[in-house]
Every structure is written in structure tokens, then in C-alpha cells.
Image (cartoon, rainbow, N blue to C red; front, side, top):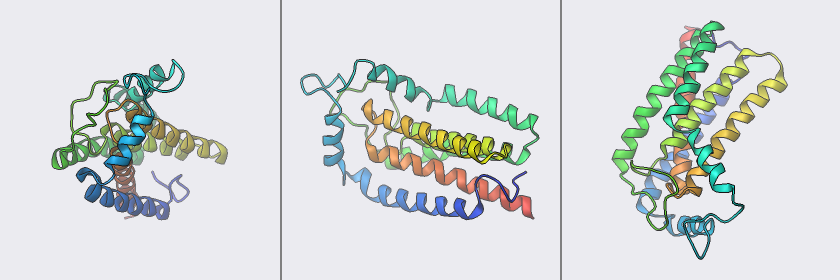
Length: 220
């Protein structure tokens, strides 16, 4: 169950939920209409070779690296991670966290899909896409899924151990993975930076909301 010394305190969860929703609200009003598009366009072009926009600036291994990092936010890898985590939670009899995981994975997928269809933002078309992408651009599904699942993954590990250093490492590592996945979407040219930030906000907000709901149920 989620106990009083769980890795994510209710106060912090409420703060993360409120901050994520506030940022997403601002972006949903401004970004799909192109409020930041000029700056985003300049930034994304700065990541590409001036003579050949199909090439990234930087070392030759950079493209291979970001393509593999972005796969960590795709449904095949996240499905494997979620199943592995679910198994670990069942072995540890962490039923509350298992409920959180299921609600996070299913809910985030549905919510992100609804928002993509509602806003209908077209993906960046001024530079070549370096990976396949087919759905709408805002918000980033990879970023939302990564924020929701890997944050829950980090919290689950942190909740199962007592050592403070390990708990901090689990949370820090999950946040680092979430950041890298979001950044990879911009490097690959399939999302604007505001798409990624909005995706992070949806994932973090939904994970926080589910965690708070389960925490409340556990206290009732």
C-alpha cells in the first residue's frame, strides 16, 4: 500500500499536479496557434546541418543515439517495462502501486489521444523527419507516456526500498530518461519543443492525479 513515508508525498503530488496543469493550460492556449513557432523553428534548425538539414549537428553517433533513446518512449518498450514492473509489484504485493500503474498507462494513452485530435497541430514540416511519425503533434505522445510510466516506475522502486540514496537515484534516473526521450523527439524533427513540454505536463499530471486518488482510497 502507499504508506505515510512513500517516495511521493501528497503535498508534493498536489504541487506537481497543479504546476503541470497550469503549464499545460498556458501551452494549450498559445502553442497550437503558433505563438512560439518562429523561435521553435529557429531552435530546431540550429540542431541541423546548414548545408543538409537531414543531418544533425554533432558527432556521427548522435543520430543513432537519439533514435534509440526515442524508442524508450514508444509503445513496445513501454509495454515491456510496464509488464515487468507489474510483475515486480505483484511479487512485492504492492497492490496500490499496481493499481496506479494500470490507471496511469491506460488513462494517459486515452487522454493524449483525445488531446491530439482536439488540437490537431501538424507536425513540423520545415525539416526532414528522422524517424517515422503519423499522429498529430500536440502534445507529444512519447513524452506524455514517458513522463507517466517512467515516473511511476521510479516511484515504485523508491517505495520498495528504505535507503534514501537509492530512492533519490531511482527518481533522478527516471526523470533523466523522461527528459532524454522528450529531447529526442525534437532532435528527430517530429515535435516542436512545446509539444514535448505539454506531453511531460500531461504525463506528470495524470500520474500525480492517479497516485493521489489511490492514496485517498487507502486512507478511507
